[in-house]
Length: 199
Length: 376
Image 1 (cartoon, rainbow over the protein chains, first blue to last red):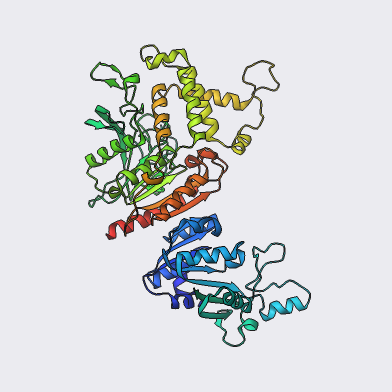
Image 2: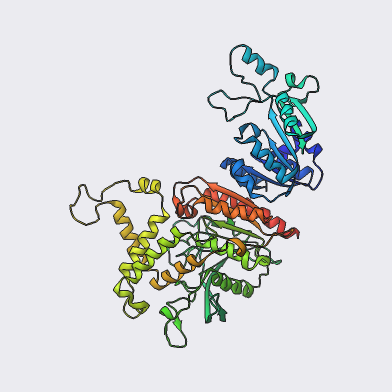
């Protein structure tokens, strides 16, 4: 299972790894099965930890030798001392957080840089669904309106505006569609985005 | 003969280790101490594969395998053995009876060499600190400098935390299960009801009952209360519901309901194996337990103890919030601490029952700890 992550790494993981310095300390909020953390520990010798709400995912993390805290993000994030990480990651978990302002401020309390990845709600096919009169259901937004865990529906431009308003510096940004990088009109053509921000 | 010997460590024997004296947390001294213990598996040449299992309130040194002629295995046999969570093919497992107990280690029912009679209330009040100090002497005697892990549930979990506080240099990893950093007023209250039940039985006679037989009524009721706190509302519903022992109400105070019969049976069988004074001393030790605040572990160093904290969703005696608090304090001090709350309906008993889930998590955690310990 672990070899699968190394040999068949999603482009997003590789891009995230490209901005992370060797031997750094990384916290992943909503780390799922721990694939990204495992990848960073193997390729960057990173000292990694995660917070995850799903019990089943916790077993998978521990099978990979990871340190994880079984909790929701809001309830677990206050358990860490100030400046204890170099990077705090929220990859596909931001859109499920209640108190976004609080959690991102907490991320900056814990780490120097914050890496946020999310599905782009303004993606072309999502727009098409809306135009046709339906809530968008795409590869990266696979849920129906009645079973989605997502509380937030944001676009790439929304997030950039948010960063401007909060005075967060955008250090890097990457856009993807089906494991390809998107450079042209990302708010229209990218399914997902990853931002590296600092204060 | 043992019925299920598959993956069993097989026939095991209790051993005894004696030492001269122990200075207790209270400042008093206990002379001529015996510790009953069992070991399973083989100690590696580097002595880096030793795991200490610490038992809960009424447990004993017999954690796994079978005593000769017995058909009941040790209390954590589903977790300790070849290929199990605590894999005896890989690790050297040690389990000892706690100080103050009544299953081979010195306690109030032991003979005081000075008087030639059982200690009874002459036995000094002991604490979790003292229990762990006695275990440390045993570990030193066996010749182990650093334990790969210390693991246990309930009061065992308190001893695990106490190991990390008292002897941080002697532990590579720690697995506290279904436990707390300090006994809450609710937990103290249940223990006090148990103690009052024992001390209120005339047969208790200020603890001097060893020539006449122990306060069976009081001890049985104490155990009945205990059993209620070990189960959950749901597990009791599933096990007993309102089922009657006979078809109709008796319209008397006989035990009509299955749950009544169960509690009576549990209480009555318990008095045959457990000493009432030990019940008093050990509950007191739990109530005194408090490693919160400044008494907790020191700030983590670069390579320090790895923790795995486990709780169970329906455990209302040691609720998950107490385990979460342990993890938060550990993280604030810079420790690597993994936490899982296992979904279970078994209440506090879950730590003895949910072997599959516990195995899944502990097995990998120990493998990692073992790898890191042998890389030093």
